[in-house]
Image 1: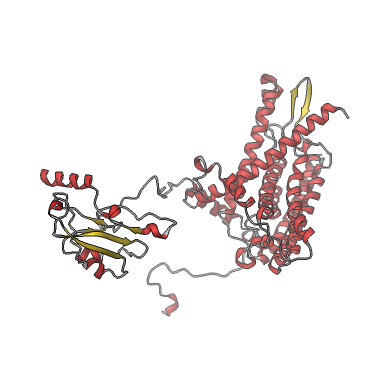
Image 2: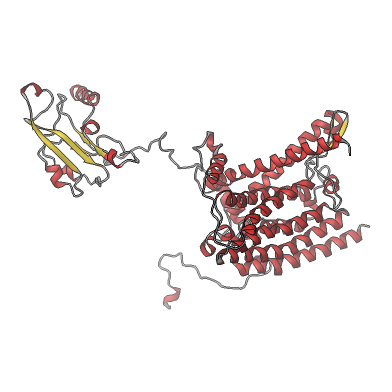
Length: 343
Length: 181
């Protein structure tokens, strides 16, 4: 392999990693601010101007906490739990197209860590593994509340993965590819998939709430019943990793939503911009546009969180198995029929 | 008419426990309504008062930190009779009396004055009974318009005369105002 490719890819990987971390960090501040605004409060505003240093203060506080290990025979699993959660949240960002391409130093630079043609399968694989972070953490805590929370999270994620997969199948039938890069490229202009797959988008959205363990599906952290849920026994930065992983995976699933259904980096008039302003400027705008879409979805996650109360467990299972899965199947049938008609 | 159907307030609503239809059980319409309500709050004016920078305006009868008053000539009114300490239900007030010397006539109004006057702000319940008991109108809770500040040291909550007596500038200002009117 050429050394230039290695340099190029490592720069992209480091940039994406830093970006994810930064976004996750400031999502915590955004969450607190938006929660405050939606409740007619001001929110944290003491650390730095308008509370801009609050995430650093939170991190410092978590770092200086006592590192506590419960009396459990599974010390290795106890440590590996948050690590799995965190790495699985980050690993998905490898296949996401952050932009089309830049033309720098006489060569085209593709703005993606790796363009594998089964990116969608890869994402689903990683999502399935990420349930182990919570399961192992809850199991190794040697605490019945943690274990119950882990079981809830596990069954919830597995059941919503089914509906999510079915929603994606309709999209794949339409686009005819599993590569995120091609799906993004097909949505050029205003050909966003949301206009062709509104039902699929809705199902995918609801399921992504469940997959990231966010309200209204945060039964795993139900304080009233389960204390802190699967991270009851965790302290210091291991606890911080779990919380951080939630925000990182929120960022990643916002990105996936934007890429799959909201046209990724495409914006109306992109072709015109490429012709008149050059590839680089057009694609930088594209990256900013993708970023704006991601920020909207992150805001939407928080907006939902401070609007809807938590589901009861039977309501959760009813919604997943009796509503979303039949709807997703209907969506597949309709998509198939329409594709046949227009062939 | 049975009692169940009577509505005195006119706001009685029948609770229906009917089974939800398929679309209702997706909660989509209900969630959309909720989202509209919360987003409206995002743009509302916040009522929070950012305390150390902004201060709420006190009502004229707000009872804050005590103030030992001076008269029009700037002399302390307190004569250390001890009625405030006696009336205090929380036993927050202590004092030590001393006789006024001839050269101190411009400092103290009466022949006896309080050389030490201390209020323990941790004990004080700001009821204002000291104010009512005082025969010389020497102690007021409503004049200072100051909240007793928080502190991490218990000793610092015992306020002496240095914090309680009305500042001279304020006494001068009051005298000038009284002369003008």
